[in-house]
Image: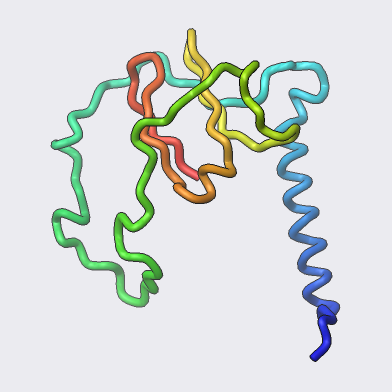
Length: 136
């Protein structure tokens, strides 16, 4: 067997890499041209707290999956991070160019590394007393 990659796979990889580079460059464009802040999610001025017990839970309700839906993992198989641990930006030892999802409030800013979110996908957290869900 040969380790040769068919030409169409090579072309697909080039397109995929191009899309990733374009996406990252568009995300970082304001930062690169002089605005030192990375783009981040700004919280709305007013957020109404929600009582979690009042929210519809499809798992507890025994809701069926849609016809034709191919479920690879059972529901709730990937557990979210409930109590994230943070450090100051000066103490972070992430490699340069690490991708993060940033959330900023009026007086606080948090960054969630995509390398961690690739494995856990969700972080249930709060910022300035408001609950947030960071999802990747």
